[in-house]
Amino acid sequence: MNLLIDMTHINIDQLLSSTSIYVFRIINSFDSTIQNKITLLISPELEEYINKEYPNYKYIIFPYTNKIVSKHKKGISKFILQTRKYRQYVNNSKCDGLLIANNLLFYTCIPTQLKKLVIIHDLKAIKDRTRLQKILNYIFYALLIISSHKTIAISNFTKQDILRYYSKFIQKKIEVVYNSIQLSEKITLPKNFPNNLKYILYVNTLHKYKNIETLLEAITLIKKINHKLVVVGKSTSYWENTLIPYIKKNNLHDKIIHLETVTDEELHYLYKNASLFISCSTREGFGYTPIEAAICECPVICSTCEALPETTLNQLEYYNPVYDAIELSNKIKKILTSPPSSSSLKATSQLFLNKYSPEKQAQNIYNLLTYK
Picture 1 (cartoon, rainbow, N blue to C red):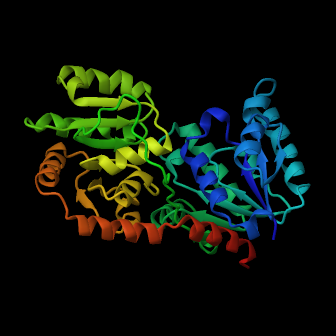
Picture 2 (cartoon, rainbow, N blue to C red; picture 1 turned 90 degrees about the vertical axis):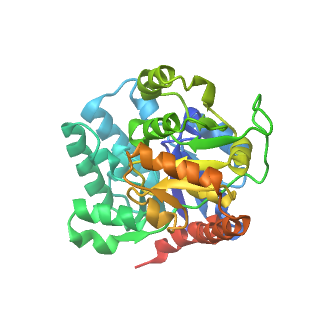
Picture 3 (cartoon, rainbow, N blue to C red; picture 1 turned 60 degrees about the vertical axis):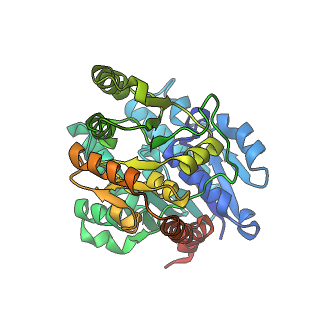
């Protein structure tokens, strides 16, 4: 069974986006017996990167990505061109199955001759957009699911969310395959990062729904704290226009270290050496970062929103309600004063490593191609 993996959403400047990481982890996890059955469908700008990083994989260049077509086509004419060309390239790929792990590339909802496996990470696109965007995205997901052989939800929460929005008749199409966790084997101290620093760690996108503001409020409430707060995430308008003014107003600038980008090796160091990791998100279809931190035997405080209790297996320290800064500050003081034992942290780490093995997840996805 030959599998075509859609990577047309990945540009060079998006190698570290969540959907890009998801695809790369799948590719990295296929063993040598499956690799020769895989073909990658890529954008032209990704060719050099693929040749360097994945020399054992065949690939097809798709020259009709959004970045290219948007230069001379808009609206319905762009959609018609892309869907026509996408079906042509997919059908001529000499593959049996097609894996689509991107979000909101409208041309991918077109039916093809291949068995289509579709990954749905979450439904934020029909929850948190304008009314017109919600309607268009609702139609897109409906067509994507209907045209699929199987639709993969990354958690039971996401599966139930899909079934809440769409008719129960699609229930047999939905399968749960959890994300995999894959940390760098190497550990590197980030450049100019103080050695032996005591710090609390936050790693996530700096958008409002990730709720770092509640964490900042909690830090403000803790008057005596010897730890810095290390924030890892690219600057956004929300960070610049809302959070930085809050930091200045409450004199937190000396307590916060903001790292916009870190390598995988540096991220491993940050997880491994943090006194505490905090995830206060209000929207998570899976939630990589608290699990990654726990695998590195770091104590974790986590919100209970959406899929987080399920995917973290109820093994972490939780706080609730999600916007309660007082509750979060109390949990922070509790963990810093009396951290979990090293044996319990090791046990949690091993549990997550077994549960989210990349090899296991990749094999589960590949096996769905033969599922009738």
